[in-house]
Amino acid sequence: MLEEAGDGPVDGGNGPAAPVEERLARAGPVVSRRVVVVGGGLAAVAVGLGIELRHVFSSGDAGSAPGSSGGSAYSFLTKHEEGVVTEATARLIPGPTDDPAEAGHPGAREADVTGYINGLLGAMHVDPPHVWAGGPFSDRAGAKHDDMADFVALPVTSRAHWEHRLRELQRRYREGVPELDRLAGVSFVAAPTATQDEVLAAQLKDHKSFSSLLFTHAIEGCYSVPEYGGNRDRTGWEEIAFPGDSQPRGYPAAEVSRPGPADPYQPAPIVASVLKLVAATAPPPPNQGEKPSPVQPSIVGPASSTGSTGG
Image 1 (cartoon, rainbow, N blue to C red):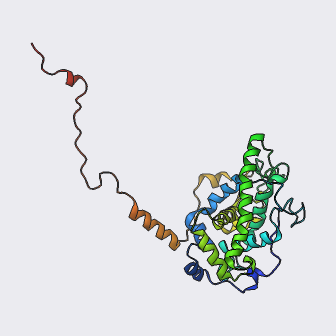
Image 2 (cartoon, one colour; image 1 turned 180 degrees about the vertical axis):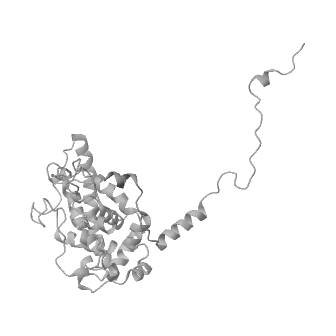
Image 3 (tube, one colour; image 1 turned 90 degrees about the horizontal axis):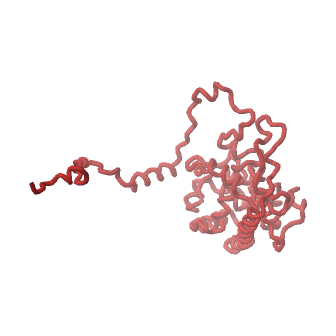
């Protein structure tokens, strides 16, 4: 898949980004990757999403010739689009080169999210399409061959569905990148990081915006199985201590039958805020503080048919 895009200095040569706390205060909806992953369990969901979401190529769209970009089979994004996508997703999920506060914590840039997105947008240009990874095993846990790298051919009806679905995603990227440039006032890649954050934060207020789509794809690219082009060197999995697929090696009987140590938990302010909101707005349990109503006798049945009769 496509290697990381962007030939110039990180953040357009504008120096290191502000600490996470400053960016949160300034940008509003843009939150720390670690807060999102630990607080929302988003990474586990993204593992499934990465397997589900994949792709189409429309011959009318401008892309690079096969093999011309980072060794990928096909690069849908132009060089400029690659640069914008790389810098935007690196602001949404920053790594150590994007924010000093993220030292030791890889982000979208390290996971090659741009490669994932290029694979997503151009997957129908390869045969079989890179929509459904094969199985049953990868070669990460004892198998001699990575079956997941052998993608499955699509039936005619499924192919038509994915072509339609992914053509729409291609359109979103073709229109979304110029919009980020426009909002930044210059090329988004060359804009100061503060401006980049403000542009992304403003768009993230709308869940249908291009930045919201980028955030979704950045999560998928960080935590999906590597066969889809992201999660390079399993950086996303290692960051959240996810071991990845375990078959066919499996687990020893003792490991399965005995409980392991408690999972580490890192409390995050956003989690406490969400739990407090849920507790404050949840309806009370039925009959809370009230005595249950006595059971009323039924008037249907034999008793109701034994009223007084003439006699």
